[in-house]
Length: 501
Image (tube, rainbow, N blue to C red; front, side, top):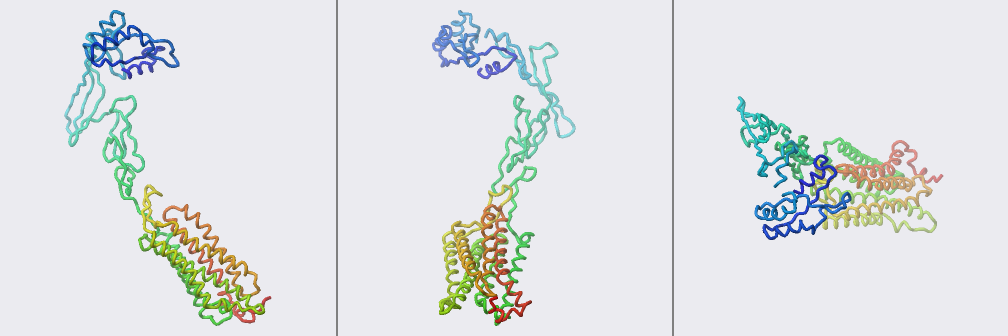
């Protein structure tokens, strides 16, 4: 009844400019309660039936609709009938209109007019039986117009037999049914399944999510395993990075061979040959450790790639730091009465490198024991694919390794800046200053690029930072010396070394 009253109030056809209100009472299926309600209505104890911004006057009882039980309704009728209030029964006989294409009327007894759907089936030659007509029969209409065709549908034999309306075609797989508002249940739209969902049956009312490691095909009617992505050796990007890694390692080995071949010459001896060979060895390891970042992550490769990177780079920076301190001590040793070089001889240089490297080994050991890196399937960065990557385990361990490398690099850079203007034709401090400047610039730009790069590009950024900083060290520190050794041997003499002009 509420729905009917709201439909009337919202319509411009039934009762224009008139708003109907209502009061609903519970008779509790009791004749005394129904009689009490009838007297209450007739006495006007509840005068306001409908009130909003458009209606402020008290309502009047225009009609009464009885309850479902006949006995309480009869008692109400006898009481209310004396006040000439139209009832629940008398007015129903006058109702006659069409709504949504269907007739609404009642017979002399107040019962709704009979409404039937007639089905006429015809068998055709194929396996499809066609329903020719479906309609309704209205006995109140003139003769010859009692039967009206409503719609045609078909019935497909075999399996579960479901009638399909011509009002809407069957929804294919990959879609779901959405009923059209205000139309019969057979009228609907076929909406494609949302991203990540499928429907594998026709006329499906709902779509279903694929399992977390699966993704729909293009038709969205089946789930397939998501492709797994990582930086593999057969990719162009990985091949380029691996090539540069091998080239860098070979360059370090060739440089070591050149220095060993000319180890007795002044330029090699003046630049602390022992630390130079150790630095070239650590640079070779730095270039090669980038290869551990390529390929499918495993439990061992995840632990190896970060710890090998951290330890080899600290070994490398420790050697550079030792060479920088040697330059400073060597200059002070030339001052009258100075004997500082005996406090930083070869033994002390080796101990410095071992000490600084041991601290990084200790950090990596604690990291691996407490919360080591491990392979992980990243399902959040991309919905349609799985990123196979190494989780850091303990982020604090990773940033401790990087932070320690950065601390040594900054310390080495400061010492090299202090020694860059010392009077020496083979002053390594100038070369170390440039190498540390490149090293620090690479790793400062690495941090935001590492955090913002998605998937396999995170690994590529880390490999690029390793290669760029390693090439910066070997080219800045060793390339000028190799050029003099090979192409300008006249400068590789003690006389040129001692010339401070």
